Length: 163
Image (cartoon, rainbow, N blue to C red; front, side):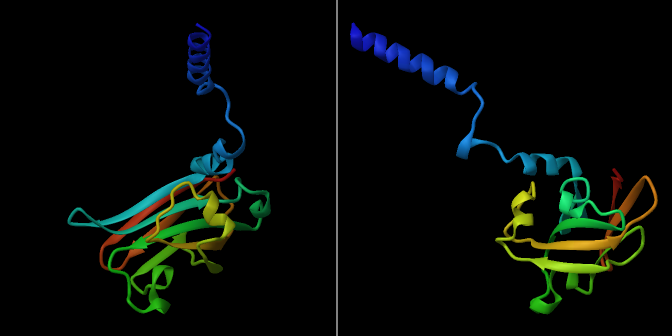
């Protein structure tokens, strides 16, 4: 009888423990969840095949470090199908691909390594992508457009609201 109560007690505990809030190593990554609010995806297709895909996170409203009134900071994850075999011409350095903000070029493109803290907050991670911190001059509008363009396959435009 004692064992029966023990088994029922453990069963009830385990049933309701899933409803309690998690902490420690089971807690969700709150920053990564917030990053979803400022993340958009651009894709360029040819014959229903993805030729280029960029997941772009607007960092200014997300992290205090990037809350700058003179620059726009973007975390860019870029995948290019059949990217250049030359390492110096891969990702955003591929001559076929360009990324612009309201038609202007980036002030700085910094390649990020796999262990970088910024990649850890990226809401969508892909082992085949190149990651960059891209900096542009701030625009004085309520929104801005980021254009991912392939010279061969066209372009995709994303609109971000300025906070």
